[in-house]
Length: 118
Image 1 (cartoon, rainbow, N blue to C red):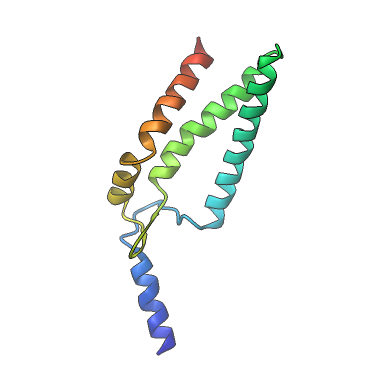
Image 2 (cartoon, helix red, strand yellow):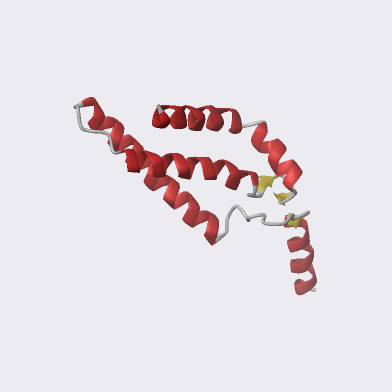
């Protein structure tokens, strides 16, 4: 009976998985977020040294802007935790992201590209 309950629990946790959806606790996600922390550290480092007149590193800014742009798409394809488990339905994941961080992420990334390209 324990095996049956595990299968039922797995079906509840991972309901409505779409194509190319990523589990929020998967190793791929952990690695992706680790790169995000690296770029966040590099952004803080570059901003701190720019105050003291250090030259800009366009290649580093380009890599960071590319990562954060891709991150928006990755978040749209990453399941979300709900009170019932992990929701892997692409539509509800998109609705959750649009109702939360998207409106902060998108303008920041757009501004970063504008500054980089001007």
